[in-house]
Amino acid sequence: MEPSSASAGPAVESNGSADPRCIVCTRKVRIGTIECRCLQPLCARHVAPECHDCKFDYKALGRAIVMTANPKVTTAKLSA
Image 1 (cartoon, rainbow, N blue to C red):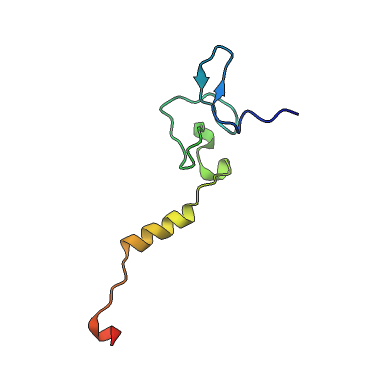
Image 2 (image 1 turned 30 degrees about the vertical axis):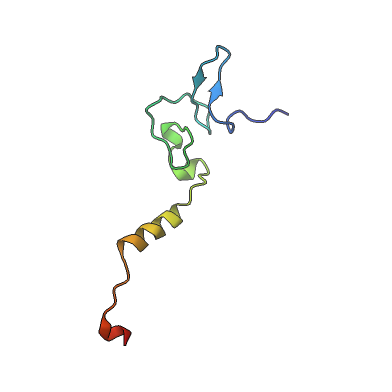
């Protein structure tokens, strides 16, 4: 059994040109298409993280954004 070429990244055709393909359905994608934060080439149907088993940790990103946007505020009266 051969390993799947869909998980190996962009497919290379017999003429030598690299055509980016969706990692889920192997449909050709255009160069200007939207990529997920996991940096995989995806078609418009599979660009949502739920559709392609995304490995990017959105929860950690959200926590980091909240921590930087909302620093802890204390006063001299509260710390004494």
